[in-house]
Image 1 (cartoon, rainbow, N blue to C red):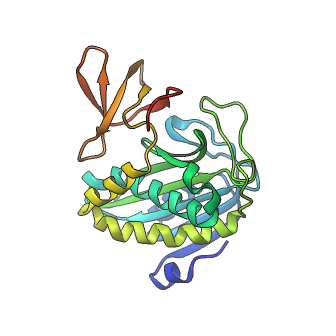
Image 2: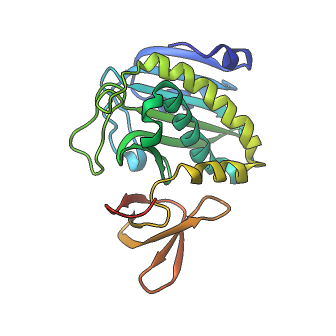
Length: 256
């Protein structure tokens, strides 16, 4: 793996590994040992990769597994916005590396990248308070050469979609697009700009969706995102519920 020269010049570093249990786990371990970031960790494979809600993330060779460690990237109240910042950066990198797919790519709330409605990439953001510092590990998994078959949400990979993009090339581009999106975000001061850009690439806005929450599911129409990035879901009784976290399933044929 290699960093884009602009990212390297801006002070981003890279620790490249053949195998790790989890790039996020390693990033937070380094933070506990005093690493001040910004630091990228990459691995060709993970032996204990995970997604949201501790779901296993299948980590076979040929795909991209990367984590960006940031220390105090923003006030704590803004840290969750990094999901949108990162989604845009991944979308940007894919669009640059596989321009033929650009019109088929979309962002699904809160942290997936889709290609023709199938999951192509996922993001896992984890934070930890370490001696009055906020350490944030931004984990990114992109299906470049292969994808899991048995998943709750249909998946695909770049090669299957018709774009042969090597993980090394995608990561190099991502290191630059992430740097630019972080600069746009301005530590949370310009989330409105990020939110607006995210919405222009969003799947499901205005359409029907199921949202899986702990212990229950909601069915409704996605109206928008509020100013803090929460999903606004209009339920069958006409009420609107603001959702901070959940697993979204778009209903076929819905708008967006």
